[in-house]
Length: 228
Length: 350
Image 1 (cartoon, rainbow over the protein chains, first blue to last red):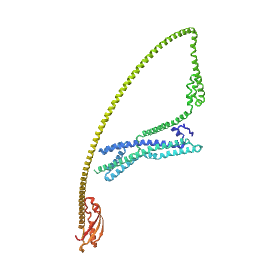
Image 2 (image 1 turned 90 degrees about the vertical axis):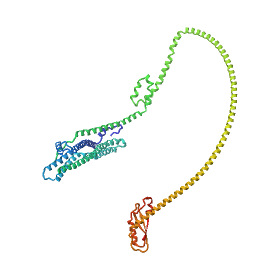
Image 3 (image 1 turned 120 degrees about the vertical axis):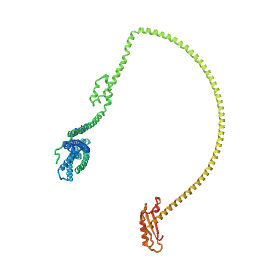
Image 4 (image 1 turned 90 degrees about the horizontal axis):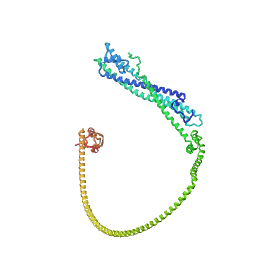
């Protein structure tokens, strides 16, 4: 560490001259940041798609289309269908099965229909919420990881100071600067992750509410059909 | 019953990855750019240190003089930085003496070539000069005569002019004197007249002032008189008003008292209606109660102040008071304070 004024303070210089643990920490943080941004964008697309499909299906459903026809089209496009369409499909399939069996009372049929819809609903929510916990983890842990790198770097730079007779700020400043980069990286990874996590969690809640109310309304419609 | 055992492909995995990398690239580019931008300030400091060395005055002084004599030293100062300080010292010393030398030589050389041709023509020149001298002398003689004559004429002329001027001056003075005397006379006359005029005006003014004062005095007296009368009238009017007001107040108070009495009577009547009288009490016993009333006629508290001596009568009246709520109160809330602490006095016989 030669403390001259003209020392190159560029980013690569700082990272390259850092000690090995600090470099490892930085690598980890870069990977975490990349991953979290990847998931941020993926989830963004997924949630947007889910909301769009939800809107479309609700439109069609409440237009008064024949439920049988709707079920046929949902079963045909099962691989590309949206979550709400899947819930509808599962419920209607179960309901039709019970109708075909003679001697089944309406209460039992409705119960099993509701169970089928709930199962699909839970599966769909699980799919939509996958990877959200990763964002939460990055958001809460990466500042600490960055802080660890910083503390390690500062420790080293002070230890180097102990051998010098006349201690100046120039002896420690580069070490501290390179150590602080780790904290900056940790924050850079954490802040977007936390923001995205909060946003997506609230989007999930809203979607779940929509699905649940749809299930209730669907049960009513089917019950009326069974009674009539 | 499991409708889907496969995992559906998520939309936009690759675009998401590309975008994530892009975000990081942008961020790092920004960081690198920002840090590089910062590293330039230390370089600037280095330049400052270099320029703070003081050879500047020595370096700037020498260049102009040595140019014509020796062009070699011109290259030296920029080449080596620490050297210039000792070298420039001798340089400025040598050039100054050398330059004046050249200047003097040039000056002395110039007249020489002119003298040589003159020696060759000396003879001719001499003759010409003598001739010229003679001519010059004659001319001078003529010039002198002419000048003397002119001088004489000039003097004569000046003398005449002087006389003329003296004459004119005297006439002028005479005239001036006359004019002044006349003006003085006129001025005096004028002053006298003005004085008279002023005196007259002053007298008139005094007269007027006196009249004005008298008039004012008269007016003032009249005004005072009027004011006195008005004050008396006002006093009377006020007294009248005061009396009216007092009367009105008394009337209002009487009305209020009447109203209060009326409502008290009503309260008593209501209580009386509710009394279940015990039979066959001797004489006409009287019981008194203190009742604390709330706004709206509710009863807060009933206390026995003076017993009638018959417990049955006392308790009958107390029950009746409790039954009579809400008590009839006047609609005017301003009157309520009169009813807050009510004393109820009930006679056994009507």
